[in-house]
Image 1: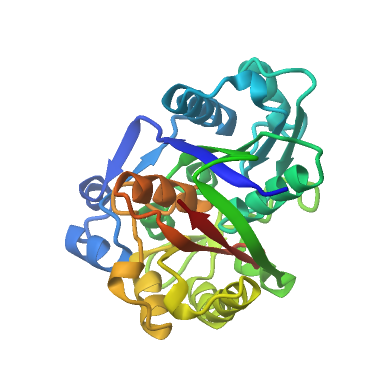
Image 2 (image 1 turned 135 degrees about the vertical axis):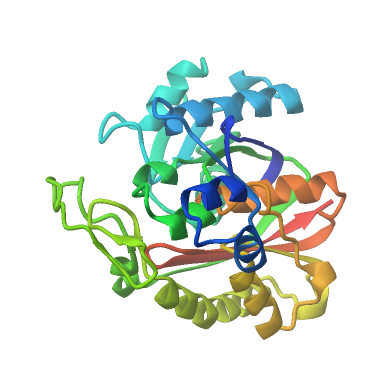
Amino acid sequence: MASFIKAISYHLPEAVVSNEDLVGEFPEWSVDKIAKKVGVNQRHVVSKDQCASDIAEQAARKLFAESGIDKSCVDFVLLCTQSPDYFLPTTACLLQERLGLSTHCGALDFNLGCSGFVYGLALSKGLIDSGIAKNVLLITAETYSKHFHHLDKGNRTIFGDAATATLVSTEGFAEIKEFDLGTDGTGANNLIVKSGAMRHREKFEDISFDKSGNPLSSDHLYMNGSEIFNFTLETVPELVGNVIEKNGLNNDSVDLYVFHQANKYMLDCLFDLMEIEEEKAFVYMSEVGNTVSSTIPIALCEAKKEHKLVGNVLIAGFGVGYSWGGCILNCK
């Protein structure tokens, strides 16, 4: 049985942090420097009392309203998040109740970052192809801002909070074709929050500062930017080649590339390395930032508005884990 994306919507928290706001906190930075290198003008962040379930609920309600989908058709909920409301219960269970979905609906969380949307499509396709579900509500919801130290100008410049909702069904505008997925846990320490879970339940309280004045703390998100960059340049070209091969295509038959919107510099390097023409490379991050698992569905939503989702669209996510994945969406 074929699986399709039927509809996509997204929700952004109300609060906005502009480049000017960050420069106000960190005068040694400049607006032009941030915008030129990172490619982000502003990012949305949740309030102290908002969690992943709150923005996830808003994204799902927006999906139902914008697409006219009857929520009673949903028979499985998949929630991708690395900032759940609780260790337990599962946040997807909370959403089932808050959205008023059937109690005969399956629901689970899965913990992945920037590859999460692609993995979510793979899981959704598996549920539909096996006959377990007919309509999967795939939600990505991340509040990475809660992982940051307030003095971390590097990560605060790049990341934003957001949630998306996608209905994967037996019909729709984009057929989900073949996948290529990969994992390399040797890179786990290069993007990590070490404390808080069961390995290190108590805080380390070990803050120090690097040469740029960014805090290094086991109690907040740590990202080794140079290692993540090297991993990306080594992994993504092979991933893209594998996806094209598995789908029986060639470079010329890919009509649009939608990569995880990590930052402008990284995307520019990838496009140059793979000789992807500018008109085939879709970028949407200047007003939202790197929203982790939500970047690809947000970009797809915006590309659809611009009538650019036509033919073979290659999506690719990559990051924390290390984890990566890609597939072809055949769009009508």
